[in-house]
Image (cartoon, rainbow, N blue to C red; front, side, top):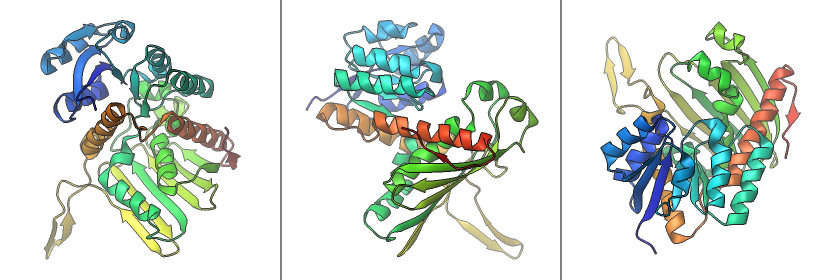
Length: 337
């Protein structure tokens, strides 16, 4: 087994910086050799902080760098599929932040390029790597809760993103709920076949004017017969709310929110505990590290990645069905292929 995987990071924004820092300091077997960003100053600053030798403003030059064996695609969403296809053609292993694209044809072209080139491909659905959610998956897989009947996921953000972001995000189902669609597939071990979604705008009227909703509930029907319920909101006054419940014929398992500590204070004035962690980078920091470790290990050991390109396609198909259902006032819609 090779001892190190030489990696280039494409995109030096918030997520790119996070992955770069983890790869440089927390992921055994990873060696950062290059970074690129359309804003070269951002790339140069990151390179100086982490000692990355090569800096580019054009991702194509990074892909042409013979020292780079794998790439982390952390650029804007509208570039993911284009860069993925180019990286596959260049023979680089690929870790791509979600989503691959909002366009199904473009995603399928990436799947074809990856298959043809034989490179490794992993999609950044980081919640699968959360230790609590993994325990839920293990319980389901081991039959601890029996036949799964209902899966419930609550996902609420502390505050909505800027309206300018909303306008280019692809909508709440493709931007926010997409993580929950992936978790539903992951926890159930089955595919979603039908979706019913209802959305409304209760947080910020500007989000509605931008053509989106900020609060929604989605019901899912799976191929194995079980049902799923997701509730989302762009704003939660008490922090980043992330909970999962799987109910089955033998019992249920619940994953609660992460807090700064698990203490509970009892006094004559009441009972108090910590609020959920406020930001997703805090909540899922360990999960980001874990997903990077497993990608590097898959490349070095020549094994399958834990979240492949097909796993990047399915949640987008579900999101498109959810959007269509929401537009039709909650009418059930079959998930496409």
